[in-house]
Length: 448
Ligand code: AMP
Ligand code: ZN
Image (cartoon, rainbow, N blue to C red):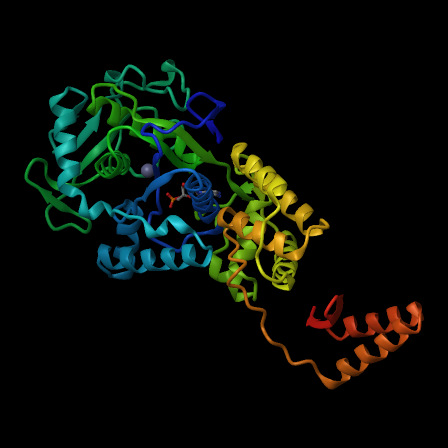
């Protein structure tokens, strides 16, 4: 498998640190609201990586839940709720969404920041002892970026933009904040979202430290893959590298950094702050299948920005329906088509080229191979695609007598060679919201 590594800015052959085993970490959701379908695009990328690697390796995958953050605290204050209540509610919604998208790694561990306060404070104290971090008189602790010589190696920010001696406390960063960042924020006892640590007193962790602590605690000091959206390269992942490599004596923290491009709406990044976002439940509320969204994601390479439109989503739904019907029409599963399987896996192994993999799926569908062979191969391919083809059951629909009559009339025309007449009746059926399909088992009527 070849994969693009943001650290080297090149596509490289993937080699795990330990033979046969992959350790991967994905930055998870901040649970203060519903996920939007941009977030879900990035989580689907991790799922595809997980599935593709699982064909060859044993993969241990972790995704954290950020359940302490300025935005969650703000929401809890506004709603008169506890921080933990808000976090619990939106974690639940997040899990429902990833379930609907058939995201496989959700079954792995999902550590929460609130469960890691002691490990975080121990880690922060160690960074102070090693001279990489300093405390302020109010009790807050900052990482001193001037002490880490490789600072900027992932995002390739220039050393001249470093604002030495200045600090940022907020969880919201801008690209200009190339400065010391908070590891521990001192807050008064009892304030919403505050924790007590015997080493650091009352406060709560900064945003970046949680991912260093949770990934290294659960997967080891050096891991194979770390994934997230492209906006996390700076400062989040840059700061994770600074923390983690300072902690372990400047040894490499992550071998492959994988970043997904954004989902856009009208050319702009889909984001909560711009208000231009859609939730999965808005999509399903319109009668669209969540897996149609998954299909839509597969149609664009993960390193390319993808503009969301309802028309494209509808197109994905139609294509998925067609694929499901083809799949359901094939009998049995026997020896698959090795050539197609190989080409499909080559596309997946080529930096997750899913648009190409999908085109190979359709070539297979249209090929002259027997249905049983196609079925066998598509079953294998679906282990990566995650479209859940086996479990799909078409809804039984009631066809009104009027439509059945028209379909019968069309058959008569067709059998007598009156194709013009047959086409006219077909158009009439379509006008009434139905469609007829000819298959080897006879005609089928569906809602259009
Ligand atoms: P957040 O909850 O904001 O930390 O975001 C969770 C994940 O979604 C991160 O990996 C972000 O990089 C990613 N993300 C945010 N907005 C988008 C978007 N419009 N398209 C794709 N991924 C996104
Ligand atoms: Zn993270």
